[in-house]
Length: 118
Image (tube, rainbow, N blue to C red; front, side, top):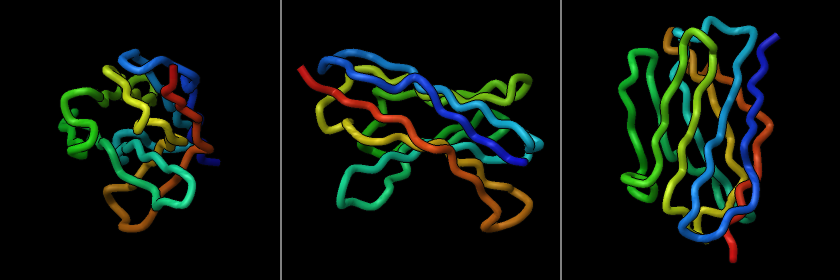
């Protein structure tokens, strides 16, 4: 049974930092592209960062230079270090695993709330 469990969300002041973590179980982790998405009410889920098994990363323009995605393949975890947080970063953040061998074979975590407010 595949499970992705996010942690690390919470309330932070503008300019602050948070680190999100996602622990995967039930998958061969190196076969998956790991990504972080976020969603606010009434809007579509937005892809913000991805990392492949070899460590290559991609970011959306909205977070580039402020967020860093990295993974630990030995521990089946992926993290999102978020710095210089802004109120517009407030959202529910989701972890996603995409199987590189099978298009459309993917899994989502349950989401973790991040609120940036003074």
